[in-house]
Length: 130
Image (cartoon, rainbow, N blue to C red; front, side):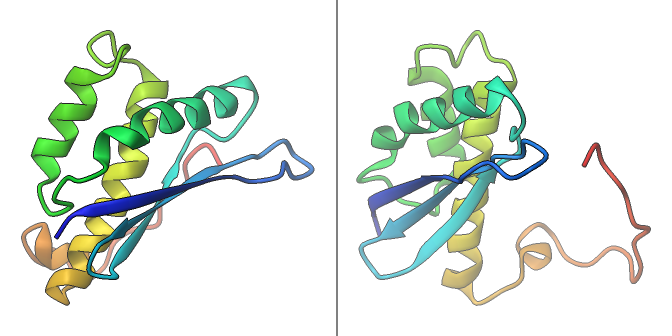
């Protein structure tokens, strides 16, 4: 299985300034996965989308089930990767989320099983900055 195409979507801003960036990674088998950059406010949302745009071509032709190989490539072969920061990690994160989506569909398994199995029956709700 290989990554054949990546669509990027930079949504229209809503009233409070929230403007998320999304990606959809397509494979040659018809499977696809969706991801999002969690940097959706202010000027950083523009930077996050631009970074996704720069990184996307590096994924074409790769095996989407090889998360670590892809993560290392994005980290080491991108211009700002080794200097890191929230923008580059946000963009890598969006692609990583989409790859996990593909992997779950490929193995017909929920993500918690792919990550090692259920640990708790209940989880307390957590509110982030949103």
